[in-house]
Image (cartoon, rainbow, N blue to C red):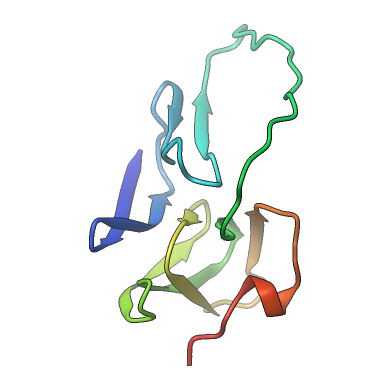
Length: 135
């Protein structure tokens, strides 16, 4: 698994997973303290994961973190630190995953019919309370 952590001042801003082989078993790439818990499964046929329910547990969520999966096409991701300074730009392509934990980010779609799955923590509180644009 090709994993790249983009950091600024010891803070992980983003984790980028490029398309490729996944490690066998279960591997989490997010920290236990992140609001998005992101892990990868690679099990053989017959592996049983015991049925379960998730219990209610009070959590304090202070910011939105998001995960994107590139289903098709490509886009440029610009990653900013907490001071809104551009740290890195990179291209995400089919099969790549971006986990955006801290700082800011922006995207430019590079191909027609680019398909992206986005998952982020909720509940959604609206654009006025959820984000501030970087100019």
